[in-house]
Length: 247
Picture 1 (cartoon, rainbow, N blue to C red):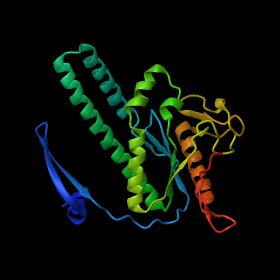
Picture 2 (picture 1 turned 45 degrees about the vertical axis):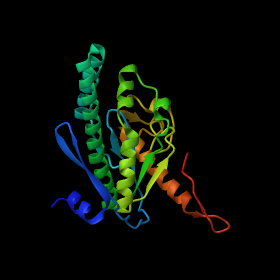
Picture 3 (picture 1 turned 90 degrees about the vertical axis):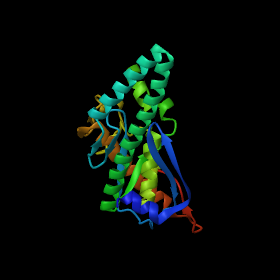
Picture 4 (picture 1 turned 30 degrees about the vertical axis):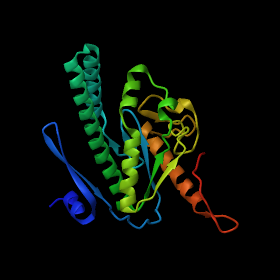
């Protein structure tokens, strides 16, 4: 018996629905899984979310790169072709394609979030994520990259990390994303010229060099630690100050 089946038997609440869709049977069941006790983190694992690499950690692990992007670009071309055709059958195929893409994205996000949470849990760290609210209006990209940004659910990936971390007792903190890609994680120097291209970071002050997404993830991890310290700093009257690092 698999993990999901054991959880279904142990934590199922209320009624379940068996749904037949596109020749397949799906079981919809609500499970109420108890939360694990939250443990004070021993540092933070920073996670940078992006276009070329969907997620990069401060440990240097990059998830879903070229292979995923090839699939995404192929889906975009097929979707555009069906939209141009405009026939009844094309519209039906377009709906099927959209559902397939959504399942693919959700599965990929589940895999990435599971691995990120497992690594944080294994090392006793919390997880630091960028606050991505308004990312679509904030990020400036070339036209070919805009569709890629708009068709990937970064919010879904963040929510998957959040609930999996909650179940594992891992702290998650969201930090201000300002200048994480332009700041040197070695000396803190901020300069747009530090980011030489999409993949390359080289500090013009101290010479620190590395993959740009890894450098950004290191900055996110540092801000996560600062945010956690600030949130757990006792106030003069004994209350806890809750705020997130934004430097």
